Length: 236
Image 1 (cartoon, helix red, strand yellow):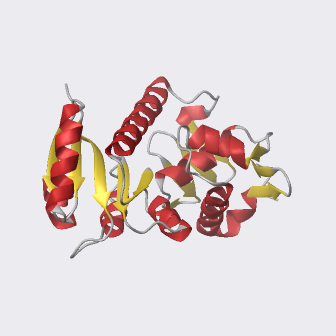
Image 2 (image 1 turned 180 degrees about the vertical axis):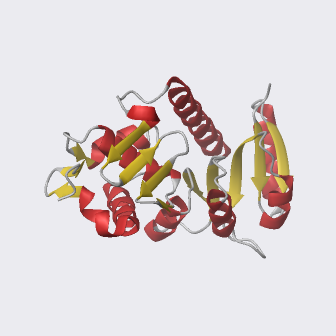
């Protein structure tokens, strides 16, 4: 069965070009010309969204943020004429999986689509086989902090801390290997495999946002100047 892609862009010419070329690659493609229309068309059967950022009405960032708050894990690749580092980081912080600047080549879009779908498939297979660590009831527990692999939630006390998928994957990686210091390059290779656009600055931003959400527990992620980051399971 062909993987289904939803293209969301208020430029009909762009939609037509993407639909034609992605269909030739064997994908089933559906188009929407606004975020509002896309939310109506989106189904669990869609494997990926190609999402324009700047549109009339709801922006692509707002749509992505809404989907992630609803715990919809569908992969999202942003398409945008805005290409500063802050724009990219905003895209990742609201749950984007990739970021392509306009104007783009069709070959680049197809390559990115294949990479994100492959990465998603690999992640799903790992989840189905279970994380490669020992833990009780599919959880990691550090005093009153719990990482639940079934619900994909971080819980402190009785409060669920809302994390993006990337933030959850980072804290899971660190907590599952608490004796190890991860260099930024290690985190990039393990979390963003086949994504050459990620920089070390991106890691620092994600860690900063994660620490902010941890609040009083922020010290559980420590930095080793000149090396990287590790999970401090003592919390001290």
